[in-house]
Length: 286
Image (cartoon, rainbow, N blue to C red; front, side, top):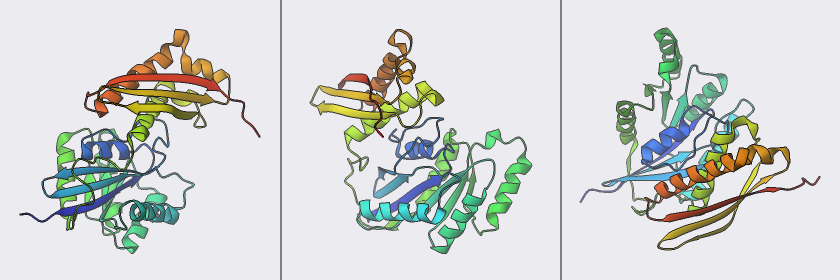
């Protein structure tokens, strides 16, 4: 019998470089939400992929921004993994970049090298680079830090994803699996549903709605036939109500419709979805 193998992989990078896209593709399930809005991922999320005797544990993390403390950012990720994965350590960092290698990314590479954790650099969206010389310049800059696992890619291409998986395989260690084969994430169903609905709100309202919009699930239950969700969108400004509802409630109805499709897909079409979203205005207290 083949011995169990395990790898814990943390995905990092700036906002909107493709972290959540890669995370979802690697586990072959949409767990992490994606949108063009910055800081869509607000907390770390664990996803588990099992293949024969191998277990890959991927962590999608909030994006880097210019004001972030690099050392605190990486240490927070390491601490999250220890706390949520039985005191285990990261086997591999995957950092996704695009267009250039900025100062924050250089600091991360140096810090990760210093704590002696392997790192792969993925240069995403290379199709958007106007000249091949730009890509070669980025690769040359990365190689100065003795990083040799550099993958220029477009995450939309299957062959590129296959190559990434092949490299990740090299960082498996002989170790007992941390999760049963039927477990997909450390998060509960209610959390995933909340994230799915939040994604649709972001995608359909864009920059019209700020981050301080609150979303809460009031009632939730699941039986053998149906999942029932009663939820609230809470806004602190009255003018946002019209933006959220749209003309003749077309926007909120579309949010509900698209959310139901994604929730149903997440649960493998096993349930009928009953979703209620109410919009509430609450005067913000000082």
